[in-house]
Image (cartoon, rainbow, N blue to C red):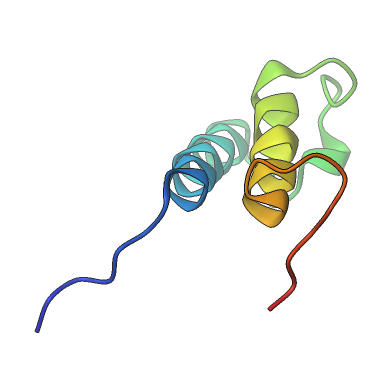
Length: 66
């Protein structure tokens, strides 16, 4: 059975999710909300951007929820 094909936006989201989770684990948090570096955190900003891009698939302003 072949592996599912993921688009570049989904792959980027997967990569950023892994980085975010590693950061949370390293700091002993299960959420970014308790971290004192929440505002201005580069890892979180890149994750949020990847979420947006994965939802819009590169199109500005529209989301495909299907």
